[in-house]
Amino acid sequence: MADDELDVSGGDRASPGVHSGWLTRNLVVLSAVSFLQDTASELLYPILPIFLTTVLGAPVAAVGAVEGLGNGLAAASGPVSGRIADAFGRRPLVATGYGLAALGKAVIALATLWPVVLVGRGVDRVGKGIRGAPRDALIADGAPPEARGRAFGFQRAADTAGAVVGPLLGLAGYELLHHHLRPLLWLAVVPAVLSTLLVAAVHEQRRARRPRRHAAGAPRDPTRRADPLPAGFWRVTIVLGAFSLVNFPDALLLLRLRAIGFSVVAVILAYVAYNVVYAALSYPAGALSDRVPHARIYGVGLLFFALGYLGLGVVHSHTLALVLLAAYGTFTACTDGVGKAWVSSLVDPDHQARAQGWFQGLAGAAVLAAGLWAGLAWGHRGTVPLLVSGAGAAAIGVWLLSAPDPRHLAFGPRRRSAARSPGPDHAVS
Image (cartoon, rainbow, N blue to C red; front, top):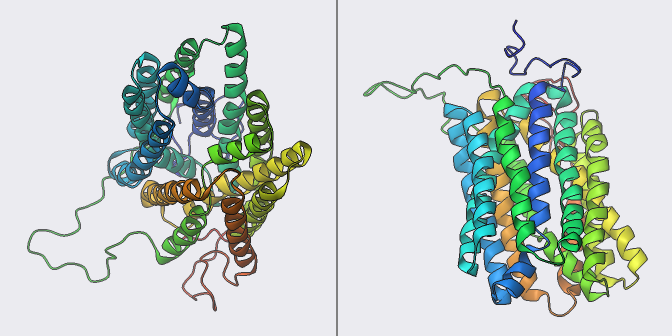
């Protein structure tokens, strides 16, 4: 088989120096793409509110509108992108998504009026929604079911490393460029464009075209499911989506740090420290989820979330706040890649992108709703939303750790028809 051909399992041949098995060339390339794009996004993220309000003179409400519209568009485009990717191919949508993200950042850098930033951010986030499901389906295609936790953990570690490098580049540029913000916006475009170009190195297996469901006028096969996604997938998606209703955007956590006395630079450095923990623990958490049911690792993550939110809701010590932010980083490491691996274990190969699209889209919509209610209830210090969210996450976490059927989140005995799998909870039903 030639170097650029794909294994029949959907994985790709590893290039020289890359281990075979779960660590495929596609995974390495897509992880590098994610690192570059997140470097660009996180360089932009801390300075965009300042650029909007001080350079363009936008009202504070415009900051919320920009982020709200962007997150809403990302959530809405995910399920559509996933369905198209399963039907017609995944790599073109990955390239389109990263290309739109780079275009959106260029529009923001050109903006002289704040509504133009709104448009640019919308284009950027649509790109995020388009690329996520097909990219994660390609990762699932290339990894054996018993190693998908490691594969997604590796990708999330690389992605989050960009969230460490990006803000540090932004801080360095802010000082070197004498506090001028617009050059930093153009600096963010560079890694975004590079990430788009790197998608060309991704190889996708040619997928056999599925036959039409039935000929015109022919009776429909009564055994065919109208919904190709199994009930277990929907149960997991609904439960994790319910948690997302109390998982409000990180920007509000940064506001809480400001409320207890952190300077702007200290807030950015604290955000970097959080991402260091997230990046460092993503792969170990993913690897552990290949041996322990995904629900258990996810449940542990939610307990760390509860610790972080409840603690930040009451503490005033800067040292304790940093420790709690590290706990919050452990939460994301235990849930982000693990959640995607969990979802991938519940569906067949032909519907991986559709499943990831629905999972990520519904979770994104729930996070948007969480941002709305938490923002309205925030007040001066944000104590009430933090305590409410922490308590809700703790309840769901305890349930995930005690559920008798951790794979499908169904109480009662397992169905006899469930297939046995190589790992603790990785059979497709």
